[in-house]
Amino acid sequence: MGEGPEIDRAAGLARIDTSVPHPARVWDYWLGGKDNYAPDREVGDQIVKVMPDLPVNARAEREFIGRAVRHLAGECGVDQFLDVGTGIPTESNTHGVAQSVNPAAKIVYVDNDPIVLVHARALLVGTEQGETDYIDADLREPEHILREAARTLDFSRPIALMLMGVLEFVPDADQAHAAVGTLVKALPPGSYLAIAHSLRSPSMEEAAARWNASGATPLALRTEAELLAFFDGMELVEPGLVSLPKWRPEPDTSFTDREVFQYGVVGRKP
Image (cartoon, rainbow, N blue to C red; front, side, top):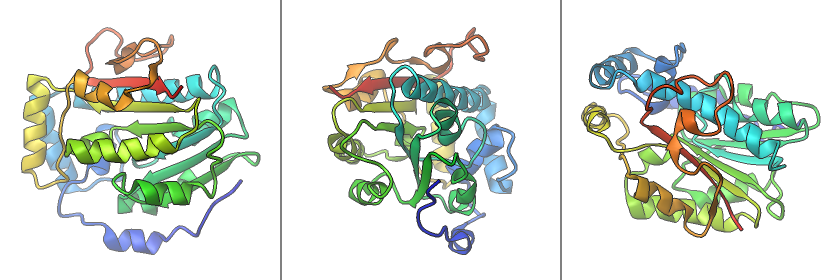
């Protein structure tokens, strides 16, 4: 198992600002985790008042990650994953799912949240046959991500690029498309792009407004057309862009009886 460079836990602790809410910590709160602070819980509760299903969105996204990774590592035969916007380690982490299908799978995690950096060692525990690495970087730094990821991943072979709940936090459309476009361009044919993203709806608009008013990292919602634009030139994997529980549901998939305003889509680079 490769572990990349030494993870600087002290640096992560020094950078954590507990006075303002942070996306990864609020998400952790909705998932029932313990890595959150009073401001995270306060804004999380405020948002749930206008969008009670947001904790459902969080849990549905974790399940989607598991199904998408199982499909890519199994049926599609992908054994390399670049997971940008990792979040705080929880169940259904990409490396755990991928290496349960293929123990030799290689996974590179990327996040710029200092609390994720603190927990990064948990993300580096995989199989003896596989490799995991962690990069402390921002999605808006695609060249840096690619340079560091090349230590672990072979860019001459297919790679699955995972963007789970992270594109919302690059609200500028041009910047978001430039970043994703640079990453996808570097991937060889046969690679995949998987995105989970919040779509516009009246309740989600109000929830986003409350989030942005909190002083936290600003986010932007997108329409179906805006989200699908990231997949221009790619072949969508069935069933295309759908509410997360409707993407290749398994017998134990939760929330299949309701509309979840977190949507998922996977595409293949021809």
